Image (cartoon, rainbow, N blue to C red; front, side, top):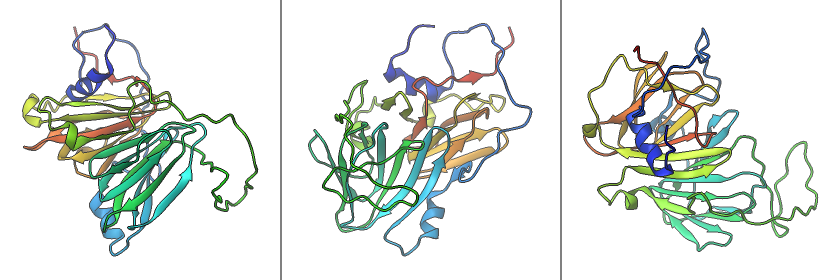
Length: 301
């Protein structure tokens, strides 16, 4: 198979197939489906989160916490701040679902992120976040599993049970924005181009995020016999950024996920996502591998 450009990956994921036929391989598939371990659910509805925290101006909930990624939904009150900090070995990224957040990132111009904004910070890069505007801001935060947070000398770290803070040097250097990574993009700005169908947002050795954008009308009819694909070594999750996405998930049936919902599929579980509805649909796909293996049912020759 020819090598694939990063820009082509979302289109391939959206169509759920590769153009070139290959001879089949034997792959492991457990006799029983992989179970959903808490806090994971087939779908986390944003409407349910908002109802559970009705009347609150600040809250946070863990959505994904597996071997590869850790994600949280966070609502922050106007004027609240995340002090300057950095992650020594991991890249973090955020999606703004409502409100406004001001990001100050070492070596970059400050960014005021609004709905549809995606912001990322490489390892060892100082950043801070402030909720600006007159209303709370809702963000989806992603980092690598078990990521650590360190602080510069002028910031008093929070107390952490079982740990002490000591003074260290680590030859810290702000990480580069390479492999097509950018500090900030906005879905609604990108989609003003009628030809836009997605792009890779995060490309990291330990975490990947692909914007997959399109329309159901551009797809063929649904094939109930098509189970889609599965991943043998990593779970996958998706944040629905706009519109709706239809998921056929092994053992779960069909799920229709809407803007703000998060869908999660454990390893070894077949899933077939596709755009749904009349308008544009977009999902932000996240997993732990730069080129995760997609295993499809082999077609009989």
